[in-house]
Image (cartoon, rainbow, N blue to C red):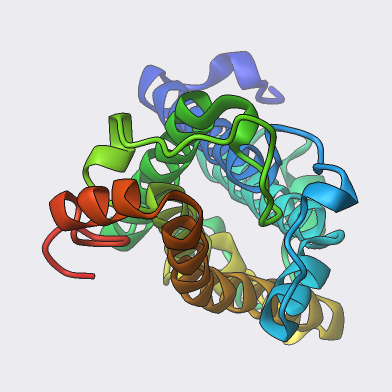
Length: 253
């Protein structure tokens, strides 16, 4: 008799639904973290970009879409591998294995829930929720470009009462978590042999380059934003900075 998806055991069904939920949550989190909540401000409201800022802006042109798409493909690979593992007798499993396998040695049995992968998933979700919180608190003043808008205000409530640049903290958590979730041992990316193909290695290399570039750019950008805010708000910024001493991580940085 040919097996069907409906013949999956309760445990296999729970595993599959859990993986689908996690992949969906991570993908939504990546989209939230890399999608501007507001359109770019008019040129006259944007600060003249430095060389570093110009580099960061260039990375943001198409970079987030590429990262989200590649990340989603990796998640789909994880889901298909789990389907093949939980339903080895299903009539479509051989076809699935042909799609997701790039090494004769690959088997769905090689995939497992690495604790680092679970940690990565949690970091993606936490980081994206922190970014979303920052979007809500800043409202129309949150832009991906350094700018001065009409009625610009110094926001010190919400996450900005803990660190001065929490949106960057959220972004770094999201990117670092994504690397853990998809790149550790036991993941489809590491075990399927896809990294042994020229296109798989190329996509992964570009993804890592974009992630590192944005991370380094963001880390450097906080200093530039502090200088701008101090110049714009003067004593108000000094008072806030004396109360909120850390830029990204409470008690550390």
